[in-house]
Figure 1: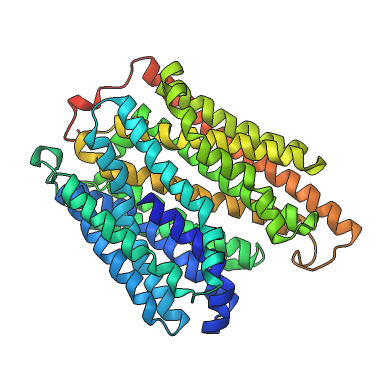
Figure 2 (figure 1 turned 180 degrees about the vertical axis):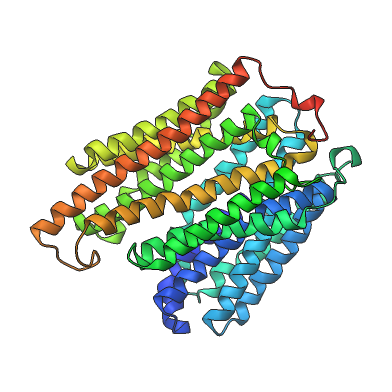
Length: 464
């Protein structure tokens, strides 16, 4: 299902100009065609992960696959942009039901950490192949077929996944689930917090810091987050037991994953702008400029198993997260001096993210009771989704603050070019500091595991 998540978004981006022309959609509407999916997906993962831990991961995944197939099929009948946005929202719901369950089921099927790492590596590799082939395949299809075909591809994917899960994975055992009532208030507050946190970065980039809307949205997200924490600390049956999140394995894994997500998104955003707007590369040339990252993301899977075998899961997590920070530092300090430094930064961040994405997720799952695995997987995905938005927002806000005039104009003055390069440097260094803080937190928390200060999750199946 990671393939569906990544392929669906990468392939749709290629079709946005065609969709806008055919459906007479504005830039803002087109933004919501892609944005609504991420907002719904990120916002519902915790609530639906908690539901899956109660009624069964396999059952929730199968329902999500049916929804995905139906929503994708409905694309054939779209006549307005608003209908497409509604369909994309339904796909976001389906993704929130299926994506965390993929990691949870992989973790459930294997008892040995090495096998779990191999299974998680395979899942992420398949998804990253979708990232690589999506734009190329989408451009090829659009040459002879309508854009609706790009989303209809999800129908056979959903059908094959449904058959595979239905026949190949047994139903959840009763002892792997728990029967606590779902915290409805906590689910609403958590969903509102994440959705507002995902919308705010987009508003900062689009409306700018001069508009009050991004600031009000950010304030609302903070208020919702505080209310969510208060609710979860006082509820008899919390949606998310904060004592579990505070476990060293869990908190360190989430910190590493968050740092990698922030770095990857922020770096990709800055490099794309730099190659095209500053250096004058065409979109095709810029796509080739990102190719080192794509190659490492796909081929790097072969390094994960040997690295984990040699140094262990915990050290592999902080080493790979450290590579992400080093890549950002290289870009912030040297990226303006030539493509070789940009390529090195892309390779370091991609290599680090490739490892930490698997290892950090595995550590989070190791640190949780067996009846909390789906919400654990949802936490991993949510951490990445939220910090992805923060990385783009931080970069866009710094650019908006330091660059005068319209950044998308065809020609810049010498002064504007200098401003842009200084802004990119400061944005890269800001991302480095933020990612380093998250990685540092992860290393500190992981140190508690090495000291033996965390209890065994196997001895705690009720979350208490």
